[in-house]
Structures are given as structure tokens and as C-alpha cells.
Amino acid sequence: MKKILLLGLIFSFLTSCLDNKNLAAKYLPIDSFETPSSFTYRTVDTIKIKYSLPNSCHSYHSLYYQYQDTARIIAIRALEDLESACIEQVFERELIVPIQVTQRQSYVFKFWKGKDSNGQDLYEEKVVPVN
Image (tube, rainbow, N blue to C red; front, side, top):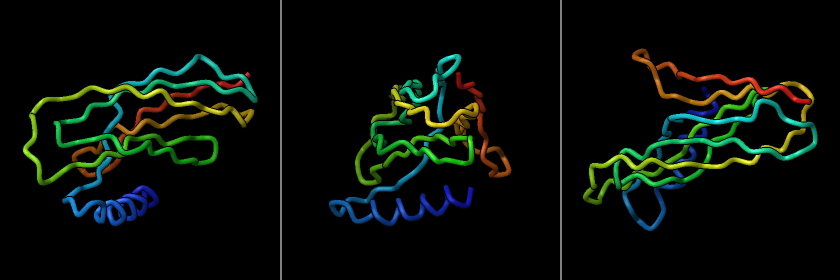
């Protein structure tokens, strides 16, 4: 989590200088995901991620994908425009992520679901074996 916080701070600092706009960087939770039942070693496969932009002032920035041994932590990075008038409508989005299967051990995906009432990160884990 310290790495997520550090990267978030760096991300916030870098994006604060873009076009003199008042933007805030934030992470958005993964709504749902689809993975294959297994991967084949030394191939490229995909996972499908669904997420929601809370209103029209939010836009997708990038995928947060952190290696942690055989696990992968995944979240959505977004930018929020703090100066514009927002349309209060949820915008559902989908992202197809290529996965280059380079390890023989099972992949453990940790999809970030937000924070609990104590501020602790919540993840939904999915294990995908490698053939």
C-alpha cells in the first residue's frame, strides 16, 4: 500500500501541472472482471475489467498494475476536473488488458475494490493457474 500511496503522490504532482487545469488524481475501484480459467505459459492472454466513472468530470488516465511476487495488484487511475460543471451520471467503462504469461506459477490477481471504513484497501482475489 505504501507503494500505491507513493505512486499516487507522484502521479498527483505530475498531473497537477497539466494545462494549468485544476485536476485531481484518484484511484477508482474495479466493478467486475473476467479472467480465463487458465493461462498457457509463454503466450499472451487477456483479462476484461469493468469500472465506473462517477460523473462527467472524471476521465480514465491509466491502469495501475503492480507486481508483487506472483501476484498482480490492479486498479484504475483517473483524473477529476475540479473546475468544470459535472453531469451527475455514472459512466460504465470496460478495459481489455493483455497479460504476457511469463511465469510458470499461478497468477494471483488482486483487483482493488476501494477502502473499508477504517481506510484499509479492499481487494477481490482471483487465482489463474498456468499450464
